[in-house]
Image: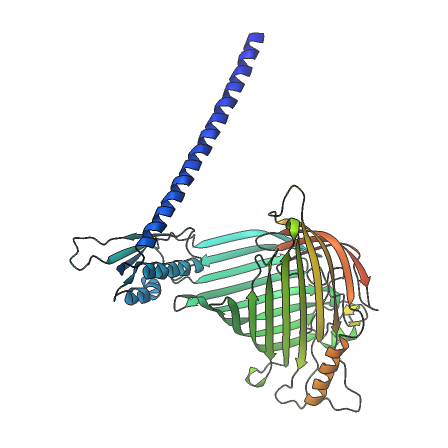
Length: 505
């Protein structure tokens, strides 16, 4: 028995030695492969560099494995390059043009990575070819034409289950269809469908049309909001990286399911309304990671005009919002982030009316919660009627955070420790004097005085510590918050607060 045990130990030691040697051999082999690849890449670069001025003519471009992509869609991408190179160009010019086409194919998000690109001489037996001709091949294997995701989400005072279906390259032109359905505790139901297509095979110019139906319980204002409607957008990305969206939306809204103790302000806005509006969004995103930035900046503006002229509807206003954020890297993997947001809702006069109408609860800003001013309840800042948050027409909010790497996980980990301070103010439009008529001039005066009021006094603010996780889809935060200054009637939240979102203050 003792001898057999010794044999077992010997065999285990032998296996460990063999595994160790095998691992070492694999590591040495991988190192040799990397070395060969590096030398090959260097030789190719030297070869291209020494022949960059040689005349070449791109005679043909072929995309392999693109079985479901229309020929006409690809021709819009490659025909300008073929026509450009018919009169002849240099090898360097051809490589630049092919690099641009390569990046264009990547942007459509219908091909698997990496997309391979090869160059070759045409068949010499073809009498139509010349010595300068160059054939180009793209090996672009298409992604699956559909993706189905199911799961659950948890946020502050909310949990939900969802189903998401994405159909890609529907008609062979990089079109996509996205359908989403979810049910939850606060958003009781939400159903949306969006169709998006590039225009003229340009991945930076897209058109989108979609519809939405949702039912959301807004406990902070003692009601439930039903929403049904649709929108259409034109999306454009400039060469400098600025994103623009121009669109129209029409939504029927209903404030219903009022709680027994709903305030008079909420009851006044209960019932149906229809918003018909045009809108524009501009985003200049320069941060290295929007969910967990360590450097860069963001500038964003949103403008909406509802009920003006031909837009009709039964609400009329101009709504402007602006946001800026910046991140600065510090030593030891620490980063400092800061952000500032503000918005104004300016009442307009509906067609057929003599004077501007006051804003509705549906359209006013809400402030406070785990994704904007932490340390306050959802809708905890601003005007209130009893226990209901009735929103405001003017707001400003800002915050600053220090993000620390967690020991042993390092600065590359998506999990960070956070220390933050944030605050803000939300104000309702100050009513004109009782003897002053409510006209456009009076509204302008009220808006200016309300904006000026933002500077009077200390903003409601809170500070805290927390844990941040940047998932590829959303950012998760678990914070311990301590309100530092609360105005009368506002609702702070001392203690733990959990938030999920893609945009945090």
